[in-house]
Length: 151
Image 1 (spheres, rainbow, N blue to C red):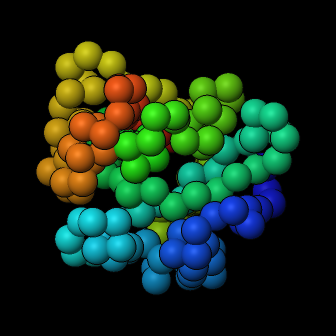
Image 2: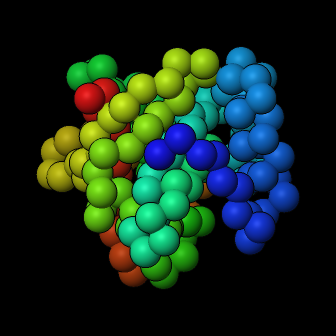
């Protein structure tokens, strides 16, 4: 999974953020949350999954928070769309992923948080990026809370 493919269908603001992060992890680590309805500069990581259909790698910047266990938490919100994002479907098929936090690149294993852990991590993420609450209200699916544990 070494190639960093940037899909043509990716919105410009995501493409620009991804290109900046790939060029300079320090500069790309923070994202202006006002672009998505939030406030302030938020930390992002790069998640690289393997396409479940194409087999090709897909890299995306995602808002994250560190977990107590040394991993990272991300939210599969897709802005409250009725379907899960492609990256979540990819990691559901192949949980071995690659992660970049600033300039630190490492292998990780993705898992969906359940029960009390999910509730605790969901609240942590909502406290960090309030629009997640609106995204959940906009969809009937339960938005997955994903933990990326270093391999």
